[in-house]
Image (cartoon, rainbow, N blue to C red):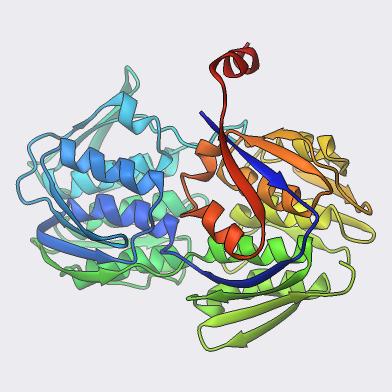
Length: 432
């Protein structure tokens, strides 16, 4: 096991290149198993979630070639195994996309219940199952596995589906299953995040017929097969936002490169309220913070609202803002566990249900903290970089699930971060 050692208290300067979107990649990789031919996927992020999903496809019989650090070829023409083992699925929440993809291609899926980040509450997949039922699948959950299969033959059928709540995962999963279904599918009350549009664009580039992604209604006319092709994943909105929040917390000036500025509007708006300067230059953003941070209130909402995946990183910056800020988490329950770690560093935070009240302090102080999930881990790095003194961050395996070369990128901005192995006896004491 590893830990990060961070010497904080210095502003950030330089340029950072943003990688392919993690949330798009972890859906596009399962979508590739629906394609009869070779998919060449560019701008693939080098993160552990992507590596795990590709290894699952290989275990199923896919042929994968890594052409360079950000380009892979996936050929799923000869898949032979449709059962996803528990040990693999439990390590990645996005493994549930394999259900929709396998149902679409084979009319059957047997996938272990997924794992991934635990926010201390539940992340139900009831809307996914509702969609699969409507498409003509019989779904049973037993023994830790989801067993789904088309009732009529080996192909699903089109249907009208209304999601009871806006869900990114359900929107993508149902879209995958419907792409190869027989007939016409309409999904209403869908999520509109950029990575949903990216998955739809990927499928369309391989021969699918999907319209409306990015709006409230997605319409899908099922096709017989998908063919091979080349596709480039969009830049990662949340990775870009993380570095923007970091310069807000630490001060300095950075250029965030290789982004789609429109995707950043919801994050940029809040940073501007906080006294951070943001300038758009082509597909880059110049982010500068010279003066003091100003308090603001944030409420997480489905896109185009403020993303829940940016909430902990912004909280790290707001710990140092003048005045009292309030964060309302409306997407996931119990996503404020990380605040106890911030308190170790001197932050003044009170949590009441889905509200966090942050009273800004003059400075944070280095401490030993634990990353309890992916985005909380990124927030720990931000807080540690802004703090006076030395911090140790544990649980960094969560961070590496979704951030490519995070240590090298922060070092490139002047962050003083190193990686250290946790001695066995120290790890045992921590576990005990």
